[in-house]
Image (cartoon, rainbow, N blue to C red):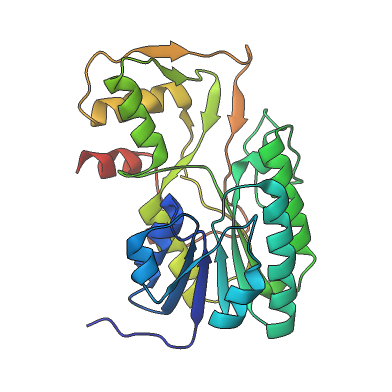
Length: 276
């Protein structure tokens, strides 16, 4: 029998997305958990714990007032400007209610650095619009009291139902070449591991910056081929894309905020999960 912890009311912004859904499933049995979804969906419409929310049209304050969460998890996607406004409002709520935000960020906050892996306290720098946007929100959150914010930087996230796996399957079914980047060195994770790590961070009331990638690094092309093999696909069409002649890192490793051994992973776990 699962013992329910009523200490927290948790609101997941973006609970209908791939990672948001996984977080909701992990936390729902243990906490009073609420979520937002954007497009009309009958199953969400009927669920009293879900609120329809369009970041470009709606004000997040209404949902915050209705739920009165002690912890907000942001797994939002969509228009960058609208997301920045939303997180400004969330930050105001945190200060007024002494609540906590768990923000899902990205390895892309380091995509301007290509010579080495990046650690939690390294200075962020990005050349991409996406990385730039993530840095902007991180910097906003880092001005809040430290105990009220956990920033979780994620590498590529895989899982049986992940958009990346679905895309690989769709490309292969349609005879479209799967693009691989032979010079890209990265680390990876799975939706199940990320949700376990978030659960731990909530239970232990952890804050700060976390790097939630695998302990080992992989080449994008080799790893993609391993995935395709694990999916039982023979002789796929592969297109090698060289963006540079040098090896390029987009990898995030922990140094100051390490999690317990059972919450760490190697890239082989991603492949194992796809084999089931």
